[in-house]
Length: 354
Image (tube, rainbow, N blue to C red):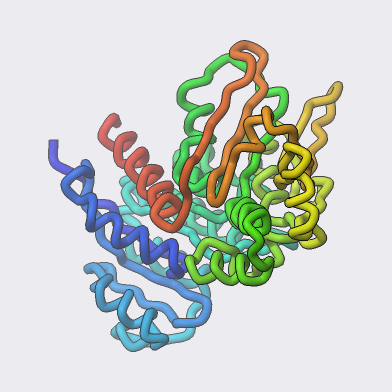
């Protein structure tokens, strides 16, 4: 069977998206599909569309030299992400109709309404493109609407990179845990906060730890989303919506960040054989799901207390399997980019099964 070619439209071309494109090249001999990038949209560096295939090496160099992608376009023009999606889906209607066109959405999280990411996903699905996103917004603000839309047009809406980078959480439950109910969860799911708390334990400065996470491309573009608990709240809402069948936004999650946690606090906890970690949790109480994000002082025998630096973990409480734990010992750009790649590979697999 010949390998399908998947045309990709990239909405967002920051650190994660550029690492994703490079990772596709690096793993080409392991993939059962070929690909080409036919559209790129950015917030600050313009856009380009070429249905024959964009020179991605040149596009990466253009953005990393702080130039505009408009210079690569045959007909440069000012376009939003929605414009790029609609133009590409119109130009590639045949490929979209065959189920081969994929939108990769990696814009920055908007904690107010999840926009424009939600609209990007909606427009792509309406244009018969599959969608893969690492943005937490769509699953945190509009999961049920978007999943219903995807089903109605027989397209896929995947978002494994929204929580715990490339470690399978949503796919693990979706693909391998049929006929059980998830009654709750508890975890450390924000790498930046875990790194900061670990550095505070070592006597490092709070702001320097934040700056290091930004330099590595791991912290959110607005680091207050991390330290004030909004990123973890968005991930919590996404987990509740997808795994527990509830309808919640980040604004329904009781939230306290780590901004007020000091080096003295974390070192005092260690002196008492405890550790402070930012814990996200949800429980089903009667017919309601309650969720929260807050720093907790944990006993040393708590598995979440042993997480350091960029390590994350999520423990699911299920009715049939009991507690199931997922641990990520490292995280970063490559792991998040891999989540996009793995979702794309699963789309290719489904195409081959048709």
